[in-house]
Image (cartoon, rainbow over all chains, first blue to last red; front, side):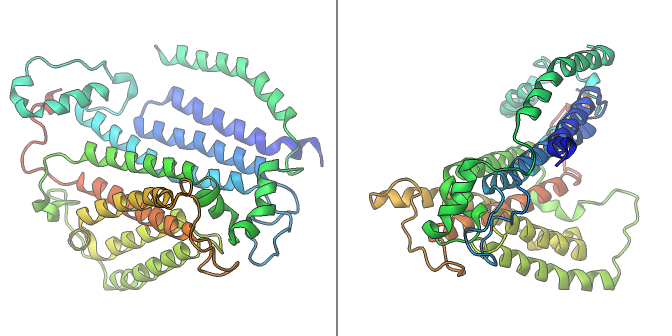
Length: 139
Length: 258
């Protein structure tokens, strides 16, 4: 095998991660930023599957092939599986935070976010809603 | 920090980190030459030791079951966070007003779409169940099957529209599925300890290799994951849909001025 095919999957993973990171650093829209994070995350899929692959091997499922047939690394596949599921729910959580940011600041631009402070005037009006205030500072 | 400084910092970090990445990549074994010893041993031992054909399920539900338990609760935490952040003071009573923008005409669905969705929805759910129960023999499992089950409910939504879908889906049931699945998985870990075995030790009969009923405790854990994933993803969809509702009163007083 040539040098290129020896390192190509790892190089693709690095490139994907770099592209996603550039998108995150320059993002002017929070939804775009969540998408860029997804690109970064797909770099981990490529890296893990690349590490677990071996030429001439079957999938690690010994139903049609008898046990003992050379198979690819099942640990990496299990990692990618959990990675995808957690990634999907995490994307949902980040989009929810985006919704909340939009509701509070009226903008999706991360540049326009200001540090959050306890509001003096409206605390009386909320009364029983104090739990929300604590959460807001965390946001 | 201005965008220009940020990009400059990123470029600087890239310049610093790239040689390291290059050194690591060239130090790795060539792509496709070999796999890690751990995976190799699992492939060699597990079919005989656990009577399952799918190594990925064996890792997720047995060999590294504790990791999956942690991941299961990560899922639960992310979905709980989503629900807590989205669920304002909008009552359950005005569900029919979601996805309606005032002044925009609502185009009725064609009967063909409704028919196709009514056929495809149950079929998709059936396929999801098939993927769930074949976790130990084919490339299936609770995660994949649970997501397919959840997409079955989405097809029902496509056909019936929001109001009909919302009448059929009860939010409490989804909460129960999500939490119950996680609870079932935890109980699978704790129950073996009552018999004096280790946490999550596979004490059930292992069944026959290449049979649907193989893997012992893995089947129960798999079911728990399937319930949690199906309930959780449907819940996510429902909560995002609810976001389009108009609130009866202002969601939180004074927030618009903030």
